[in-house]
Amino acid sequence: MHQSDVAAAMARAASEIGSRFVISTGDNFYPAGVKSISDPQWKTSFEDVYAAPALQTPWHVALGNHDYRGSALAQMAYSRVSARWQMPSPYFRKAATETGIPDLEIFYLDTTPLAGGWGEKLEDMAHGRQPPHESRKQIAWLSESLSRSSAAWKVVVGHHPIYSGGRHGDTPGLVETIQPILKAHGVQAYLNGHDHALQHIRRGDIDYICSGSGASAGSARAVEGTRFRSSRAGFAMFSLASESLDLEFRDFTGATLYQASLPRARG
Image (cartoon, rainbow, N blue to C red):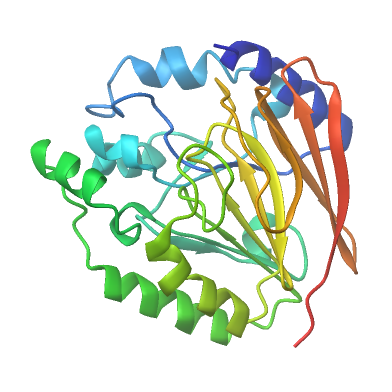
């Protein structure tokens, strides 16, 4: 496990670039979420690990499937007691006024009820914690929100990958429901976790970025559109220019593994 090493490397990188916020792609507490807002894991796995001054910025947090093995409601409730933790609802939008970055809007999904895998659905049922909202409502929200957005840059974040060369592979439910919405509304990038790897896949005008190895790492194979893949623990960092979104993967030592400039989609 390299969580503490990754946190230290993140802190150095955040200080270097003057990071404005952190994105978590879900499975925030592994393997079974948290039980309440007083769960000791808030201290041992979040507050104490990401304690560096450079990481005392807003954390925009998505839900993962493992978070539903505990209390997803507790993770939302923690937003009301933490100055950093921001998860106002299972899915939400962060506008430029909230990120501090002009022309950028980020849309956070709760992909567990959208993923379509019977294994996960049965496991959720066994734990008695089915997601409380309907998938169709979330899909309609994303489509409507993107259609109203006039941002030059639109980024969507979810836990499950749409396309992936990692152990879990593609997520058919998201390929069917979410990918067409991203394409229709000019989304430039989709960020995810779930597979414990670092990946950059480009298909059409959309870049699919997997940053799921913040604590441990697994293998990833090359698939259609793969530009980069790594099985090292690490993280992704981004900087935005007018015509490009610059991506860099760093490993748990802080070493740069990969850099790419993602172009702004048109239309």
